Image (cartoon, rainbow, N blue to C red):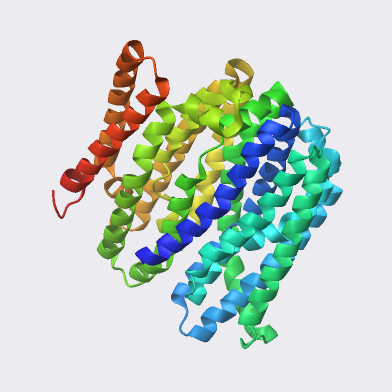
Length: 475
């Protein structure tokens, strides 16, 4: 299992790393409003995919984990590929013809033209998102690294080159959309080829499509509500405070992908195994496996989060330049979400087949996010909005944890699974590092040396904690 997690993690890190590199370059070469518009393109697509596509990778892993034969597993993969293409076409058409309305909603006239070009990129982005799950089903996760490297180079280098020579936002989006379209067609062709021997009878596919729809629709609704609840603050910032304010906020709200990548990689690998355990009512085995994965995820993400929170200004300056330095407090606030997202709190409900409960909980999350976000944005600005997002997300996690405990007959206690010991020491180290940083700053002139000393000290202490405190085999 660990090797599969590593393959998916590294592949996704490469893909997201190339995206970060593109953002770093465009933030320095484009005006703030143009860069904000570029970020809004992916924000809009993330909302639309949440309500139409996001459940498909999870559904694929769920049903292949319960499949009785290899042929049935491949059949689910073929069906997922077909559904991905169909959803991509529908989203592309929707984006193309609703660009004007979306521009008004986001109070950004620049979206009107570039969104029509961006619509052609949907099939590529969705197919790339589905590939980790597809490779898991095919037991070819080692290919994820090579695939991600190829995609990263293909999408990033041409756009960076074009931007470097003075191209405007429209030309950059046109090129990026063309590349994604080509990638989507190639990956779809590859999936159709590897599933060429599968039973494609309409009756068989229809039955499986109905099963996927029944399982997926609550997840899609919950995912849609969740992403809207999580991103509705972006809409309020853009519409109430303007596109320039949104440009700063989008940089602050930029969460370093390594955290989500690691959690999603672990979740992708865990779902089939946890589902199999729960199907046999082996709750202890499922909880033990989940706890082990959460602890090891925290060993990596918690110390990194401490560094990013303490040195938010350094990170923002490095990634996006001095013109976005005012976004540092927002960046630190959003980084604190790492402590919540070390677990996928809805995973157990999905494995238990209780997706409707996740939908209800997420609906309340959207309502509180929308109401609180609007009021707080109007009165407390961007920093207040960011704080509210963190509080609301924490409440959602607690709600999902309580529902999981009840639905499992008090067998799966997410509060017990959560790595509490790692959280305590991480926060303690963050406070201690802050104090040390303040003392050293007053007595030393070389700021970068202070940063390096602090980071080195943290990793030494954290390594000792892993060996002698966190690891139960040696503790």
